[in-house]
Image (cartoon, rainbow, N blue to C red):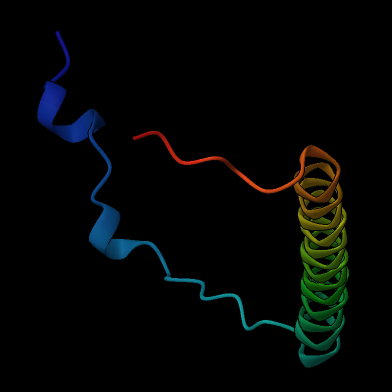
Length: 76
């Protein structure tokens, strides 16, 4: 029967390989992230602008309704 301790590899004897990132790939990745961030920022700003326009319209409609309703009578 074989000694099981001899079958186990010692990882300390294996060479350590560290991958160095390619600067071109990093630059491309950063550019893609910047483009996505800019797109998302533009979409958020557009939605905020749209919401502001809708709020302005709502305020205008409320003002028109209040004008049509006339002055409010106070209860005694």
